[in-house]
Image (tube, rainbow, N blue to C red; front, side):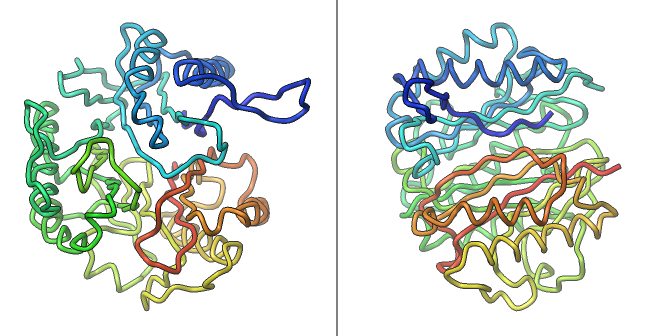
Length: 357
């Protein structure tokens, strides 16, 4: 089960509109109450949750200990993998945190969760957010994004060994980059080339105003699969030079790369300044990848939309496009505000996931 992200937004009957109340602990509890109701409606519970993604505003990072405390109360003996993602802001301005979960009521394989916080469910292995820190929490590779990326991949390889897997089983990576890391971000491609393959995973890279710890230039989230990864490409030759694929199929799951309005053949940004047209172009390319894997619109089950601040006033146009391009039941979706995107004229990037028949 893939759930949309949830904040503590509630309908205020007196004010007759949606509001967000409370401090961090209160907001986290409210978000989990909503998540719990959805899980129950689907025949599940918090004991079925295998992965949590916590999207935090900068002021939320400062109060993160409150988040962890409430999470411990809610989940008890269950210990889902936790990915912690800093964002510039959330669509609800008063929200400090947005929480998204993945749950599985029928796990084909259960393992003891290692101390690293990684977790396996139904053949997928979710790794917790990895930062370039040593065992004592000290930064590795100060001011060097390449050294920090190497440290992250080495840590990921160590975690996967607990499951008798290697980095060749990685099917999806998402990395978040601080402003200070952007200048040399391209150099991290050589690190990916040395650690990953022979089938490169789907990937997304998103700049954020700050990361979870000071001086960290890059942090990563990884998903691996016991199924043999198969590259999916509609025929875009540009990806032959990159260290990720537009799609990777592992069993019935199709992991897709983040898509902006960059032409997948020429590398040019299309529809500059128009988020609605960019959204139509992006979703068109996403559906091309899904169709190349034998799927259709109805196989799209989840999207994460990253929007730049300058396009926020017209973000509703994206919803109009979704209603026209996608079909019911519409996918779960989370919308986030990032610092920027890797190409200056892109206003939106969509990180999708599909489940095939």
